Length: 63
Image (cartoon, rainbow, N blue to C red; front, top):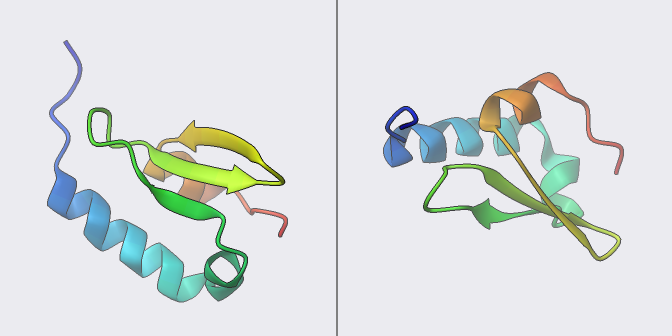
């Protein structure tokens, strides 16, 4: 099976990401986390996607 998801660490890192990327918050792109996988749930233009926190931290979202 996969690596155990540390929910507290994910929330802390996601909060830090959001503080540094306020436009993402203003656009309400981040919808939450998937509790089973720890993936970040994103929605833009009605399309829902999931990505790892690592991927989110590396990419630049075009708001």
